Amino acid sequence: MQRYKKNNFEDIKKEIFSFLLKIPNGKIVTYKMLGDIFHLHPRVIGKILASNKHPEIYPCYKVVKSDSSLGGYNIGIKEKIRKLKKEGIEVDEKKRRIKNLKNYLYFA
Image 1 (cartoon, rainbow, N blue to C red):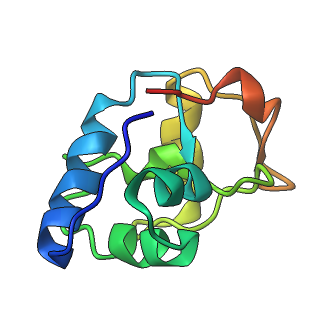
Image 2: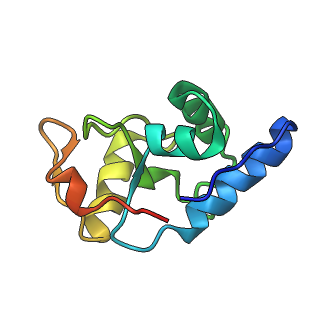
């Protein structure tokens, strides 16, 4: 994966949202993966994604936790599950986890 090093927070946000557009259908990334790419703590990635004012454009639902749990979604967890399943990603709705996470990870 390409590594990014930017000093300007707004530039980093733009880069992260642009990266989300590159994730193919049926693939997901983790907060940690994004943190490694952008040299940020995964929680900072989560806060940036939570600030997404255009979830219909930037697919934040494609980002999950490294332990395969779903994490958050500003439109609601049920909508995140619906969108992931629509792309063919297996979700254990009861446990709110991705089944076989490694099968769906996107490596740019």
